[in-house]
Image (tube, rainbow, N blue to C red; front, side, top):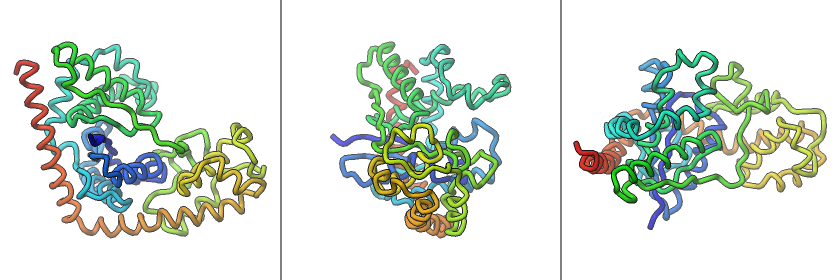
Length: 333
């Protein structure tokens, strides 16, 4: 049987290298494997857990789809749709919120991080969105979910909800209990200005990240100014442990070159970072510039992007609506 894979990306705009190497590059590999059935969702319902400008949100939905296509995801092989079009997601989220327990949500560390000190002012949606994430996954009988470290806890919650629903209603295996799909040979992409912080569009300095729409000169300038230390590139991974900026840049190179950290260290051991940065800039331009050019072209083809979303909606709704009808019968509606 084929693996059924579901993953989503929030349409918050300004997608960057961390999004590409952390998720989208992996999506392309999954899409290209004939043993997989992939569903890639633009999770616009998740996006509104914080305030959004409606016009910008619509643009960001298009940009996210354009990024999927420009990166190499084939809409003929995979389903691409925006979450809000399929009403089963919202309905299933409510039903599953009556299955989930407060104690489970109170353990979610990402809410505490995102809400900050004044969590009383955070939206209820930000608190409960892991339940919506569970609905997203479970509606499609997903068997595998690509996850990073920051989403592992949410997938565990999804598994708990699935098992409790099955047990409460005595419907063994009605909800498939999904497994995590962990990327091999992947280094978490950190800020170019601070190797202890994740690369993020919310950081004030644009020099902290490589945006997928950056021009060649911008990429070169950002890598040139990326923070490093005064020591040459080491000869072993152990020597990188206390050098977060160095590890980050070598990790970026390794991910783009599809090589291991160990292999990259062997290639550049003893060299200065000024020399290494030239090679890093070259591989970034080689990999990112074609994606950037294609994103910009596709954003001028809104009718094409809308057709992809419409076709994806029909396919996704066909699957999800059948599942929600079965949920109705089980629950007693």
